[in-house]
Image 1: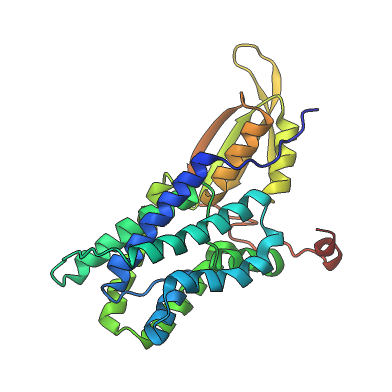
Image 2: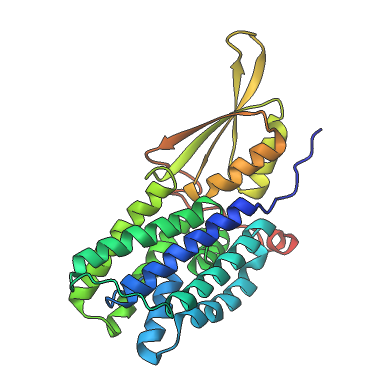
Amino acid sequence: MQQVQEEKIRVLDLLMIGLGCEALAFSLVFFNIANHFADGGISGITLIIRALFHFDPAYSTILINVPLLAIGYRYLGKQSLIYTVYGTVMLSVFLWIWQRVPIAIDLRGDLLLAALAAGITGGFGSGLIYRYGGTTGGTDIVARILERFLGVPMGQSLLWLDVIILLISLVYINVPHMAYTLIYSFIMTRIVNFTQEGAYAARGIIVISDQYQVITNAIMDRLQRGVSLVNGEGGYSHRERKIIYVVVAPHELHTLRQIITDCDPHAFVSIISVAEALGEGFSFAVPKRRLWDRIKR
């Protein structure tokens, strides 16, 4: 039986993740910092530290992510770990560079225009990072750990972490600026979804391949997602075969494509936009693993 190939590190992925980090850092420096906007996630924490202690976000991004990566490395695959470390480093590098480039973007004090610009630029950068399988570390790692051990869906924990960070940000920005920050966050979310090809909560994937069992095992092992095998029949050949159906979150699409390509480069794949996904891994709690199972992993 064909074996699943090892996760590959692709040059194109690294280039696109780097470009995304450049755009995100540009947005943070010239729109968020320049207009006193807050942010969610680790970026939001670095902005709080900058405002209170005048510490460069380029350095605090690395310092905060190092312990998180040390804790969460065992829950990331080899490729995810490399891409996360790479994304974290590249974001810090571009934050350092953009803060030292003498560029002035004159928006004539229009905070709404600044929020639009920040949302579009930052959303494009973040969407590009996620689309090519990367992250910039931070709360993504925390959310993944909470999902594994407490059964809290990643989307839910990321939302609450952002809410907490934004509330803390009120120590250095006023209510009007927080209102514009929320506008920026809303626009950024929409642009991230658009960059990832759609604004839905999940994707339904139909796969037709003679290597269906290899693909099924790889999906369950690497993505921890349930897979359904449906009996099908070829319209022309009338040959019976198994059809794979699986639902994944948008950020898992990149890994899923790699799994299918590694197992069967000639597989037929159809990706469907799912308006709503209910059930384990999306709306219900993920079953908790027993302590012995966690130790074995």
